[in-house]
Length: 237
Image (cartoon, rainbow, N blue to C red; front, side):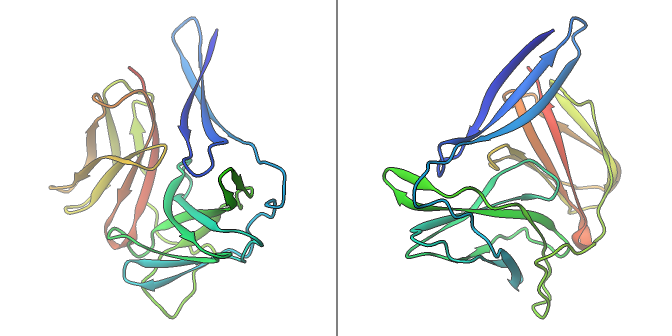
């Protein structure tokens, strides 16, 4: 059995954090993969993990994130990801004296969209000295401004299947697809590498990944009325 690893993503905010993808291949060509998040934190005054994380919907396409100010911090970065995925998407950076909130807007926020988010802060930028990451916190977006959804809110989640996985070219998603829904393909850093629109309602959707480099990708399906589902797929050459 051959075991290999590849460092797929290094954060530009905390260069001592990265994701390592391990791949094991047996003599029959069967492949298994797993991801490992490796983080090292410099010792010093900046060791207080951000706490008190809260989020609320403040507009049709806007979320306000807040946390307890970290003593001596000069910048804090907020990361998000689709609930249940392993992505680490930069939502924004708050800069100033002990920043404690960030307002994030995006045109594709829809009612019932479930995400997870976390915060890391820096007390020095040169040389870089950061806190540990906070824990991931669940949040479900709603446009009802009279409610605070910092915790988990149950909503309708689409349950589909993706195959083949791993793949070297095309994948098929077996689910419910309605006209005008969208599917977005993202790499591990959260960068959008492809996006598709559903033109005709159906029970299966085909996505060609042949031109993408090998690695791990996430395919997010945003359905109507806030339904959503996210798939992780391994692309091999």
